[in-house]
Length: 100
Image 1: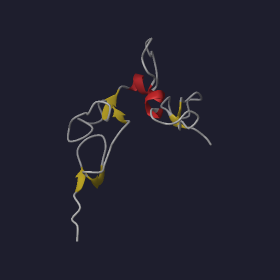
Image 2 (image 1 turned 90 degrees about the horizontal axis):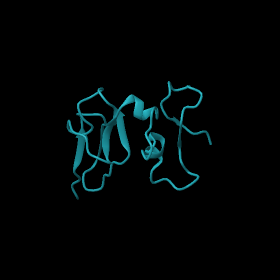
Image 3 (image 1 turned 135 degrees about the vertical axis):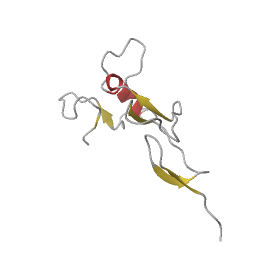
């Protein structure tokens, strides 16, 4: 019987279980100030990290800066983006899942 390594992440902005050798976390974000770090009390650039409320709501996005919605949709094929800006303020300005 083959033994499987399982990790339980209990500290930070994300939580989950998985085989350490076959688990990949990408595009994972949490609201800055709500916890100490994303994984084991640390952020991991381009994997799991904090964003400010203004960044998540795309308030004052400066020239040349990627919008938060674009970050969430990164890696999805054109036309298959699942996140959208909250144009109607139905989620207090935070991104929403697109309707199909």
